[in-house]
Image (cartoon, rainbow, N blue to C red; front, side, top):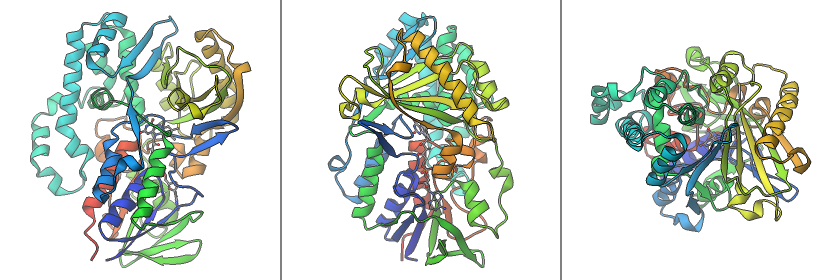
Length: 489
Ligand SMILES: Cc1cc2nc3c(=O)[nH]c(=O)nc-3n(C[C@H](O)[C@H](O)[C@H](O)COP(=O)(O)OP(=O)(O)OC[C@H]3O[C@@H](n4cnc5c(N)ncnc54)[C@H](O)[C@@H]3O)c2cc1C
């Protein structure tokens, strides 16, 4: 047992390659694109630099841990700062809220802006922490599909305290029951979108997402989000991982229910272990033609996707920060449109990320690089040209009104990303950002496991399998895969 192949150099594929190299495997990574990182990549439009995908960075220790495991100083490759304000929120009635990282400032600001008693908010945050403390080992750090997970003390403890988890209420119900300010309820409901779900359907356990942001903080890598990819790629190279770019795997070879290797554009590469970082849906449908796919798992509802406008803006807005949210007036309708009607409503919530606030070289002086993200349904064959055309007009109108400045004349350059393009660039089924949605209380148990139960030595990592999408969970999927694979012999 010596040769390991990883299919895809997304964040989870990179982390898996590092872990397997540390374990003593000779690791080859085959990547369809010409660059590593998958969704976590970057591009330039003239003098403006943009991170193409995830703008929010939490739990940086999951990145630095990989360097420590390899005995390499992380500081030499990767530097980041904690943000004092996690996000700036705006409502159409001119209400503004700064989500301070400091707990006391956060509580004071909530009391000032929403008139919500501090003790009530503190109680809510404590309960969210308890949910995380009780479940992170079970749901995030171990395979849910191995009996030994259920025999651990942590799991038994979580099961005896099931009623604290709000599993069978929705996130919105928990928030609505706790707070009286509709705007604060909307703010806490928003955390469902961090895993591409609907706050009116996803389980109340998801208050723990707010805990991850509020308790551990939000961070900005000093050279932009893409430096996470660059740092892990550099570490993999140091550890001797061999990368093959422009090399799409076309088949995983299985003989007598065990993997033998992969085909890359009809060239065969032998492997004792194969880990797929490709979305699990096309892994089965395209790479494993002779294996019966687990259709029930694969056909679950997709998470939301996004339409992103990357704009070079020839002005600097002092009221904006790194993360900014302009809420819609009818949040419920926004999610009905996305998940039921597979559309984008007329007044969507707008998220704007501006890395040039923290990394000035990302835009020319006096200008800003805007990454404007609108939650969208997964791709069901909608007419995206028509949707984008209408959406662009709506959001320019809304932002011009709220920022009291006509935005259209300030747009110096533009690039647009849609769900079909997300699928084309990364193979994510239907362009979903986080694999399956978590729109029911059993969602965690319904994700595909990190191993194949029918094929020996076949494993899965990344946002479409357990424990879920987003950078931290993708890195944890690599950790779980690592723990499932024996040391090289
Ligand atoms: C617009 C956007 C915003 C997001 N916002 C956030 C955020 O703020 N915070 C956060 O934590 N997460 C966010 N996410 C989610 C996060 O980006 C993903 O969960 C994560 O990056 C997925 O990583 P991954 O390792 O699963 O694989 P991916 O990034 O999907 O990469 C998979 C790789 O596999 C390659 N591949 C596929 N098929 C083959 C094949 N047959 N052969 C070889 N290579 C193949 C692809 O080319 C790709 O490089 C966002 C995502 C997007 C797109």
